[in-house]
Length: 365
Image (cartoon, rainbow, N blue to C red; front, side):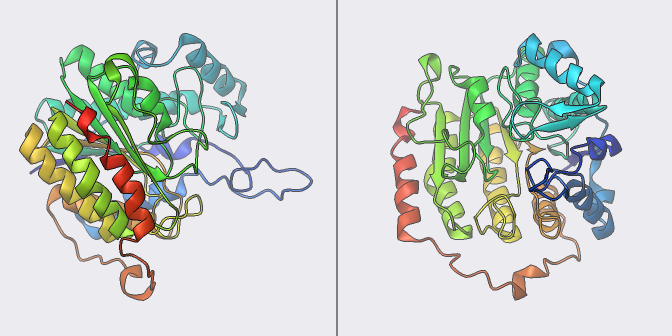
């Protein structure tokens, strides 16, 4: 198989400036580095090169999305606001979502990079693809940027594919530790896209991501949330895939599977309280690839979202891309043997939350 990779130096130039994790510096908060900075994504790309895997990935050149393409999802007022802040040199897209000079153009390139990956998969240039883009997108709603996200990279790419490729049913499987509220917002009233989100229960946004959010109108039943209690490891995530994600995909039978891919459910991420390891991400990737082979000719697209542990997210990214490409490198996860992350097995209270999501599957047709 051929696996494509979207990467570009400008993604690392999106400037979130010196905050203290997510708080603006002031007389009570010492300046530091914003948690959504370039380092984690750069380290993923660099580990791909050092491991030798990069040599086997098909490079996909990103292009800037047009404002008309962005406007398939976002309001013109939102687009104008992001552009004005960027041109002013510094500001906040909403609440704790900073951007700087040039960020508007880089955000267009991030959305366009996901579009380019989408085009490559749908035209058969590659079997599957990973868009290692920045800034992320899955929290951005129609008229507001939030959660470090300016534009919805995945919704924009899906809407592009629907408009230009006549793409039919699409399923999204968001495994970022935070709820994919922006992707949910984009397709909440549509039966053409099945949106699935696995996330830490009420972590962010605290008011969304519940079992009760099912979709409206033609989209009723096609929005599926799997809120998980803090402390879930590989056992709970694999069980959620086995009992909910894979049966949902089998019922829906999509023409393409898209993954908003965040690695902040990993065991040492500063923004989450989950314990997934690189092997857990590898197993989830394998399960999605098997589903894609059965249901949609192997067509699978991943677009990068969160993941803020510079020391561990690169191993998660490498594991995913090794699985997507079918190529194992010499690099092993140094934390796998020595970290001692116990409680990886499925726990009863975790199983209860998963069962609540499984009870919603009958609505998917």
